[in-house]
Amino acid sequence: MNDVFLSWKDFFHEGVSTMQGSLKKTFVLDTNVLLFDPQSIFKFPGHTIFIPFVVIEELDKFKKDQNENGRNSRQFARIVDDLRTRGSLATGVKLDNGGTLQITAITNSEIDEVSGMDRQINDHSILLTCLALKKRGLQITFITKDINLRLKADALEIISEDYETSDLTFEELYTGQRELVASENLLLKFDEEKLIPLSDLPTLQDILPNEYVHLKSAINPQVKKLGRYSKKAGGIVPLIKKRDGIWGIYPRNIEQQFALDALLNEDIALVCLVGKAGTGKTLLAIAAALETCINRQIYTRVLVSRPIIPMGRDLGFLPGDVNEKLGPWMQPIFDNIDFLFGNKKGEHSAPGAASQSWEELINQGILHVEPLTYIRGRSLPSQYMIVDEAQNLSPHEVKTIITRAGEGTKIVLTGDCEQIDSPYLDSINNGLAYCIDRLKDEEIVSHAVLKVGERSPLSEIASKKL
Image (cartoon, rainbow, N blue to C red; front, side):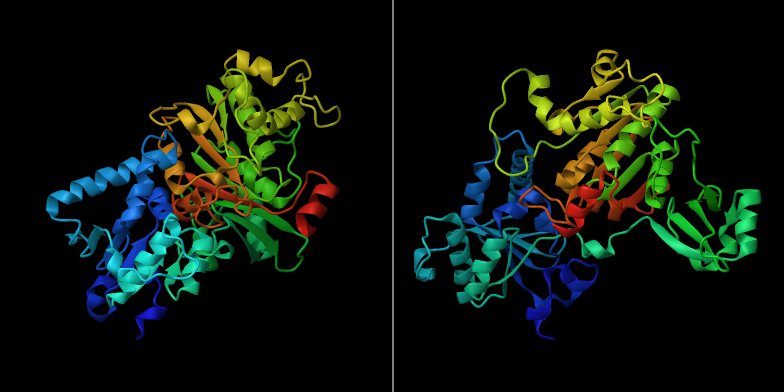
């Protein structure tokens, strides 16, 4: 088989390294790959990983930053510094997975001048390094998350690929729900016993914990039942329902009913809500948080946060203290709370809420709004934590957030995987999608996809046609 047609991901799976004889390749990693995942050098078992000298120089510029890029730059430096004890990086250090790591400069005599390429530009220097390695007769694959750089590489006949943490496509991502046609007897049993054992549903043997099921009648499709697979109960159980809604909010479609069940369930510690703009992700999450924290007093407070990433051109530094700086970023959260507290007059106002506001909740210590910047190292027990716009987080950032959860804490991640503002993330390799894919089979994790826009007819039209 011609190894040109084998993706680098084909080498990641266990056992492929035994084929390394004629398939041994050299993977050249770009700076953005190492900033995205400092462990990426270990993801190519049995092959040579080459880090261009200019990449180390670029990483050095990030080492003092206090953001995720700075932490990843420092972590990569520590990893490679430990590997130096095994041998010379210039000639190649053996890795535990059978691969080799090499960091060395290419001499001027090895680099051919290419018209239009300025060696003073770091990206061009990296591409010229790839050409020099090809000139040595090596099988080169350039790994970068920069789309334009992949286009330039292709123009120079250099094989290039994106660095991905998952082989899934967005369409294949776990939805957390399914439809099933059931007999009248089975639906009647569900009404009476509030449980359908999994043994009565042979087609659901592959169902995952907390997966939602839309049961339709085989005779009358208008008759339907909604349930959730409870691994503890051993079958499908009814959803949690509140006749008077939660804070004046009632689910408007099936997906919102699934979402509310997950948000109100004390046994579920992590909920991922995915949906386009206007589907009610944030509103439902905040309403459930206030319900469980204030009315049911299950949690001590509500903690709301979101990544500080602008859409479009940034306005620059904002005046004031930390709360004043956070104001514009957290305004979508405050808008939803204002709606719940009756600032929008009408039938959705929560009973007795008109005299309250989110400022009072903050003053009472019930509501806490803060950026994710300072969450590292903290422990958060007995809190209902909502992370909005989680699609703009990297997989490592999501891991950092979830590992902050203390005893009795529930975390809700909301976002739209098709609205990415971060330059190095996409619809499947962002932290929200990564979390869904990795944790979907855990008993204390649930996931729901919201598809129908409920904000307004205009919002729904814009979401579909613009």
